[in-house]
Length: 357
Image (cartoon, rainbow, N blue to C red; front, side, top):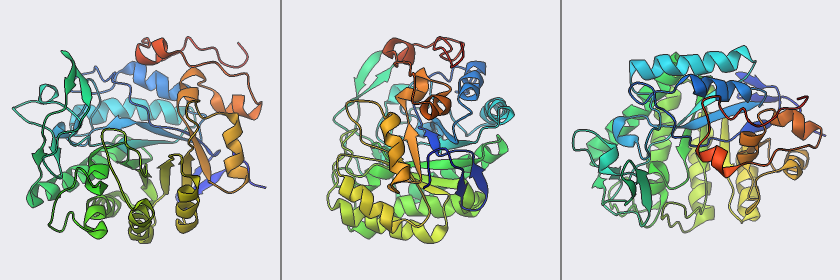
């Protein structure tokens, strides 16, 4: 029987020491020059290097891709140099880390962007939600509808960021196609109102995400590319219909690329998860639906019963930097403290004790 503590091969190029994945979690602490990570970021990720795979916080591939204050980029030389300190720290501890490339699309605000830029989207439909800014929470604005030429430029931005990620020492990248950000906005019914080749039919709506994946794999190699999805997730004012057909077609289009993995953030529909798991022939990482509780020890059984090849943990990794060791011993587990999660300190959440202390 395969367990979460067995190794996992990613597309024949990288072997993970275990099947426990640290989920990407936005930190909004990129306070270095030019939206770059600081030394505390290196401490934070190195503390968690015993994960089989770390997926970084969302990193914008371009200036206009930023949707929150103090989130990091991978579109400048100084950002690449700063991320190199982070990846070196993780590798020194024996870890594997992928950069999550996250373009937030219409989720953002002009006050977060320079030079009079406004957020962009497949169609000019404002999200019925708010984002944090230096002036406090602000309503999302009506975004600029991307032209076909701007769509191609956005794809090129993902490619450039992926190349920068490899130059910064990341082992690969995860394309963020979930949580109501740009790629999922193209997938949705309520944001993508286009009637050209980038919308309308299911084939049109999946096209942007597929073209991003094709271009990034051509640039850095499919074995270095993962893809995250969250079927039916209404976060950030997203509406999707025909989930089985939509995501079935998306995975069908992605399958020939030979990606390192698909990372599914699950909703309450386990049957859809099982359908997509059966369809996907590569590594399948599952962030299981455990609301209102964080993913815990009981989710390790999803590897044992074949539901997933690896399980992603979020909040529990914040409070337990040595989470794989704690999971192997079935505890004890520190309880995540929301005040520490949102505020933190420059030591990278080291207030949480590790095993043996």
